[in-house]
Length: 165
Picture 1 (spheres, one colour):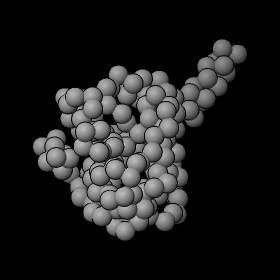
Picture 2 (cartoon, rainbow, N blue to C red; picture 1 turned 90 degrees about the vertical axis):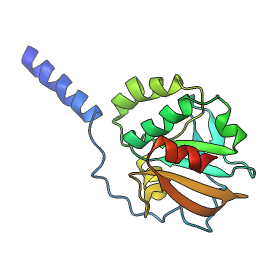
Picture 3 (cartoon, rainbow, N blue to C red; picture 1 turned 180 degrees about the horizontal axis):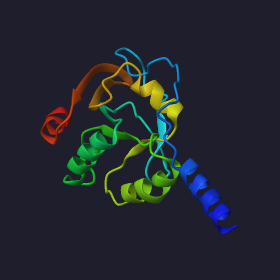
Picture 4 (cartoon, rainbow, N blue to C red; picture 1 turned 180 degrees about the vertical axis):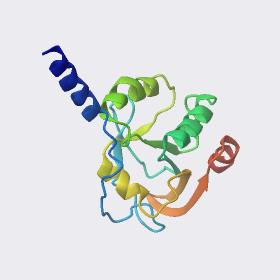
């Protein structure tokens, strides 16, 4: 009986930690020059709804764990209002993290940061922002009154610093 309970508990744990990378979602790309980001609305690490304003000039996307660390590590060395002073937002895609890992480790770690991190939590949201992009790098989206005017990619803290300045 003990082995049966242990097997059931292990199965439930592994299901909670399953990898969702096999899900294929066919969506229209959202990060395209000329497209509006006015409807972009995501919660931050404190579960507070964040949106773009007409003054937002840059939206920084990190779709992978490694690029999220590059972005957060760089931003952690700056003043808490660094992004706000530059009319910029930082968005991290945490949708691929298993829900158990996300709730136990990822979100508590992000709450220690002084800067705001908007979070992509759902696979469907992730798919529409990653579609037709080089999502293995940090994506810098320049916007003018919500409309995407340019997209560049960086992968180092120095490149990120130059792109935000």
